[in-house]
Length: 330
Image 1 (cartoon, rainbow, N blue to C red):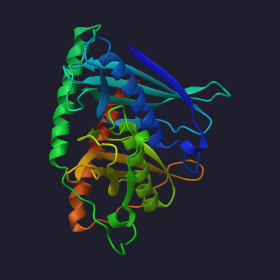
Image 2 (image 1 turned 90 degrees about the vertical axis):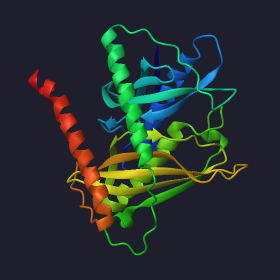
Image 3 (image 1 turned 45 degrees about the horizontal axis):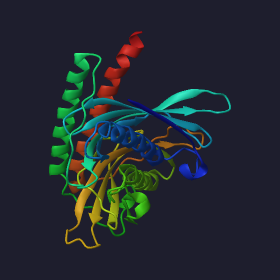
């Protein structure tokens, strides 16, 4: 099963430099994934359901997209377990004046089917047919890896971002930012819970503010580490999206983003951590060229997060070099 769609990029999709927001692209990716996985999960007779986003694997922004270009989104189901669906999504940018196309994004998303009658009930997923046995085995391996990573992330999710008064420039407190949003009907699925794409767009907006405050230049999203959706966010909740700088290299910045939900309407439940992720940004000159990033000034408490961020940066860099080796050998 394959889904394809296209959308022209408009000024309200982009920043002041004309680069399309990473959050806008993430929202398109999530919508494509939700459509194809919901279609698949309802392809057999039985209880109707809607596919809910559980996790987004690391997503690289390979090339900037600009106002006036057309974003072509294609999605394909690549693996199914008993209760989840893996979807691969590709985004191509088309210059409609020249017809030139280029790949801008590749992403992997995981969905679970939730019953329309009972949102707490996870239904079984119809299996897909694999062209080769190896494809199923590789998919099962990816499934087990993401399941373990989700558990580890949830266990370390107790951090809270506190306000800092009179912070020094280039410190964590100087650039950290928060956004408060009341969840309305237009943000939600048929269940009355927030679309994953809406949440990711807000997270990218906060992370972008943190990056811009730190370096005072045009910034663009370079990548997003795994986004984990720990709990659903219901219509009527007030969500707080908070971001802080965790690591800087010479050319990039890592920003940690949390989403906390306050269920105010008819809910005795206390505030809870709903989503968490790491975003990476690069700083650009007026000509669109990468420029050095001011180095982060850390306190003693922040050095641990900086070292953790450095580890993720080096791990990603090593993976990218391994992926590039076959290309250079051709």
